[in-house]
Length: 230
Ligand code: ADE
Image (cartoon, rainbow, N blue to C red; front, top):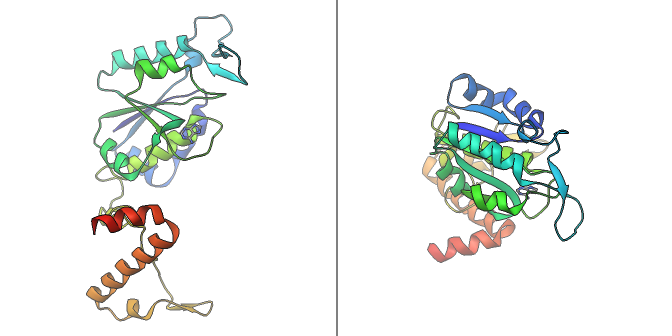
């Protein structure tokens, strides 16, 4: 998988790939990353990338020219590039999207700043437009990182142990059951006794029940979808 980030602030993103699982995935050539700065594609003297909104409105927008030029360049160099725009006005990004996008060859994230991006850029180039939640961030960098992280861990080989994917939250439309490690009693709190007895069928059944209870309590919206299907 190749990830490209169109951003004015490469450092916000590159540092996340310098540790832990994503660092190892880069070293093992399961991932590669590249950056494009719209400022390098401006045709005006001052390297300006933002301007006032047509019709008024608070704040500045990234105007079309640098983004059209950078995205044309990417598409010419990489005809299979699949272009994603993070914006609070997109459709909600979910685990099912992370799994689906993990099968693409090359994803490009176009990071907005200021009040966003001129809509004509999105209309012209977007393959998909995603929001990572109902709140507004200062730019698209963090949203791009959230999505690229969630996508990366669904690429075969990135996690090392693919079993970690099968029992986690959202895989069965439910939240993951609580997990425990050692010791059996800590701070006066015990691991549920069934977990210590080694009967795996019973443990699985208990975990399934815990998943259902937890989902019903914290995410009634998910639970009602689950109960319709089961
Ligand atoms: N850019 C700013 N806020 C965002 C959000 N919630 N999701 C995706 N991109 C964003």
